[in-house]
Amino acid sequence: MTIPFLDLSYQTRKIQTQLLDVLRNLTDQNRFIGGAEVERFEKSFAQFCGVETCVALNSGTDALRLGLLACGVKPEDEVITSPFTFIATAEAISQTGVPVFADVNLDTFNLSAKSVQSRISHRTRAIVPVHIFGLPADMIAFGALADQGGLAVVEDACQAHGAAIGEKKVGSFGDAAAFSFYPSKNLGAFGDAGAATTSDGECDSMIRLLRNHGQTGPYFHQREGFNSRMDTFQAAVLNLKLPLLQRWNEERQRLAGIYRDELESLNEVIFQRIPEGYTHAFHLVAALVEDRPDLMKFLSEHGVETKVVYPTPIHLLPAYRYLGHQEGDFPNAEEVCRRVICLPAYPGMGDDKVYEIATLIRRFYSRPRAE
Ligand SMILES: Cc1ncc(COP(=O)(O)O)c(C=O)c1O
Image (cartoon, rainbow, N blue to C red):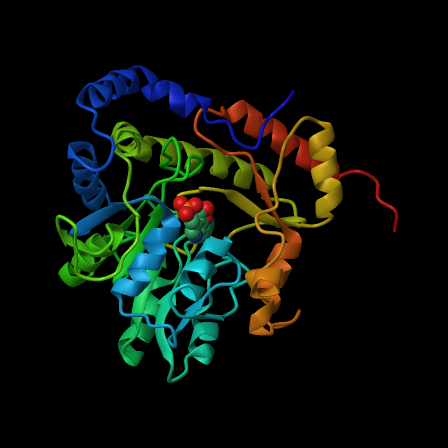
């Protein structure tokens, strides 16, 4: 038995035939950037998230960066985020303002509102909660903190397409939100792509201006901007995949449910806690485990590929050494990095494989161990 951590072939097969027709059309028209496919995607994704507008971009990283700039973040402004995330969250902040980390909750792996509150200073301009692995962050608490302090909230929803608190989808809580359509994401393009969502007209206009070199007319540039546009081809892929997203998310939720039910009795495996009323999009199925290296080796010897996402918290990466952090500064994030494991769970994987993996994990923890 070989079970890869991720296999996109099922998702790709679902749209391949239609995509070849769309591609023929696009190449017939020689239409490669922007255009009707991009506009159609912006409308449908805004509707999916329950926001006024969506700006199609080249990546989730630029969605965060442009979102922060549109919210008025300046080089001296502090922006608070989680150290348990992909580096892009921190990069978008350090390339617009100053990153300030707060700790996460050990049970949800998401940014702790209490820790954020303790890190707010007179220089704080914004908060970037990350919906880690597809689980919404505590947006109610962050909204309240932002209201109190006059702060902006930019959601990092790069892993959380379709996640929700109650009926309200992520991407609709902050002043702006960033999504990634990197191929492995719940909604993945065939290359790099991303989007920013917002219901604030000024924010929308600013992100649109920034994504295309600040251009307001032919070769007339109102301000400096970036090249952050989405390719037409990626929009065409996303237009074909978006109608399938809800079903694919439900499949991820079912697989995650099997893991949870099958491993519920093990004290050595503690899954990410889902607060009441939250919908987890399960970009990744993650748990804190005992004896992680041995468990991964055992699973690998039985043909099961697992991953550690993320082994090092951002504040301890060489890239951010200049911020002067040391081990112990954010103990929960550090502990999650030490104990977290992600298990295979993707559309088309099949329930039987999840049962097999769960059986292997139970076997691993029931082995005789040296005292
Ligand atoms: C939490 C998080 N933030 C930001 C990004 C950046 O997105 P992209 O790779 O599309 O630039 C990612 C993508 O992996 C992510 O997982």
